[in-house]
Length: 588
Image (cartoon, rainbow, N blue to C red; front, side, top):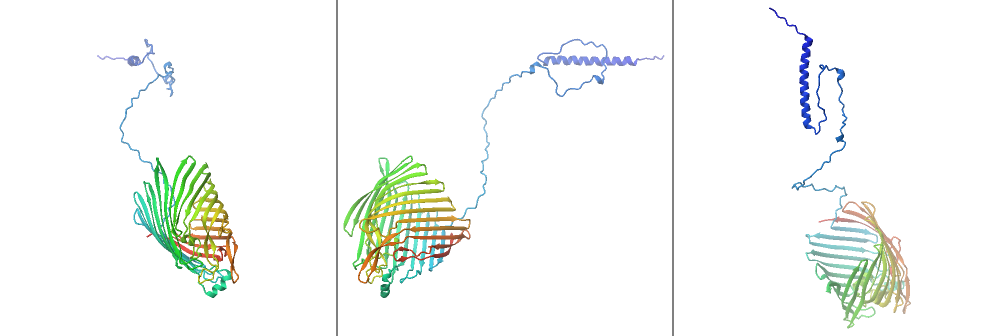
């Protein structure tokens, strides 16, 4: 028996749909219960869903979810306050930051400095100029050095009867040692000079030619000295110098000088004190008019205590100078006291500084000093010290800018027994210096007033300029004039490094009129007259080229105005002169 089952397909599909719809409803109810526990307030209302007919979704019923949903929640309008609590505690760290490094700046290679140099030049009038300077460091504290120089000329001044050649040679050696608490230095030297008494007055040319005189005069100088500087002691420094000076005319002189600076404690203050001992002894083979020997000599003991007071812009130094003099030839002793006061006040920082002072002292004159200033002196000098009662001065100085400074001052000096050079009287003898062609010394009480101004320009290390001018007025008591003292002086120096190789310089000098005595020989007697020596201007220029760090060549021109002026009466100088040479720097 066959049984046929007839199934209605549409009814069967509806039953399957209902079965699935029931499952979906159960899942939705379960999710609703879960969400009710996770929310603070359930906003979904509960209710009963009555399924009327099975849901048949279509594409038209689908919707698109917005990328930025709109939220309509009142609680999101006000944010809840959140409080943070930070609990800090130290933590050991072994991190070490790297050290910073300065940026590298490109700079020029520093020029090498050499300890030694040698220079040699030759010029007109058969002039030779040479010098060598040596210095060697034995170790960090010790050094040894030396110096050798020579300057000579065979002369050639026109219209002269006697030779006018000259030479100047000297050598010096030194040794220095620097210790922990002191440093000291010793040096020794020797010098030889040769000049000529060529300044014959016209009235004596024939007489000198007849007697066939020779005007040569040579000087010899040997000296030895030492300086010691102490640290952290009351004795700051000690130094001494011994000098033996003489000539080829039988003259000789010894001088021994000891100087020291000490600090003397007084009531918790220190008084700086300079102590000096000066011994002089010498003699000339004869005096000017007779053949009698002319000895001289003395010793001085000086003491100069001073106290320095500094307060803000005011600086004052108070002190006195005391000297004891023993003249062994005059067999007498004297005691001298001089003021020693200086002060300065900064009125406008470094722009305007006022300064002034009054000092005095006992000036030791010597044959060496006179011959160094005037090499045409005769070896027949009467030598005594000069008593400088006071040297009073006031001035203003300061800096106009960082590259320009100035100094203006006025000075009044009162000297007793001031040494003055004067042309020697004509006494025709066998001596080569007795024809009015040499100078002697006279002493007089002279008061000197002077006014000076100075400007220095230092734009940079490549350009330096200095200008100075001085005016002098004199009052003498015994002599008719202040012999051979100029009424004005002026100078200008210039140093210019043009570039890395070329350099130039200039030195200009002006000396005003001087007074001297002039002797007219009328055959029987000589009568002195006062003569005025003309002022003169001397211009000197130099130009050089650095071939390399060690070798330089140069050329110099002296007395470019071609003026054969007379620095001393009847002694004209060489006219325009040129000299060319080279300098070489080196190390051992």
